[in-house]
Length: 115
Length: 110
Image 1 (cartoon, chains in turn cyan, brown):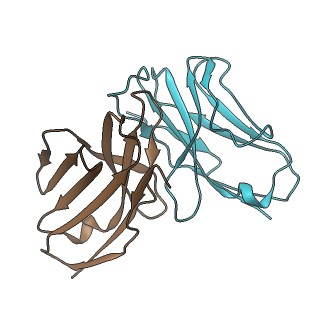
Image 2 (cartoon, helix red, strand yellow):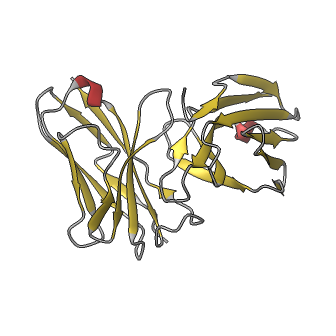
């Protein structure tokens, strides 16, 4: 079956611009996660959705970052006034219900480069 | 101190070698542990979960030492296709949130 998909695969933008990154989770998965991976580092948790609601957004670095999942499926991560330090790979993952023992399946990521 | 620490490597080994990676974690209350594999410019994929009793999956063996707060991964009879970055992952509070180490890079040469 189809895995987690993310678009665009690459995004180049200029400092100060607004960007949207999209995640389409595995069908039927209610739990959705966003992570950010900088070069040479492991992924860092940003936000977790259970259904339509953001159950935990404690990993969002500041108020320039926002994410939505209005219908409980596709999610969009939005970054306002981008900074060069936002350059990273943004990974989305999903799992069936969000239980601890479930595997989180990752998408291929969006590589964001802020010039 | 990072919550999960790993030797970044790279570990450069010949085909057929046995190689072991260790990882330490800081939160003694952590409950779940995993090894993920990440190929270059690809997404992380679950390699195996790590159980208190230790577990084995083919050429891969994972061990957990709660007293010393470290996790290990042993790869026997290394293959060229094992070349990747191995991420140690801890679930610190039995929730959905995964804490990743920075990864250990393995290069298996012919």
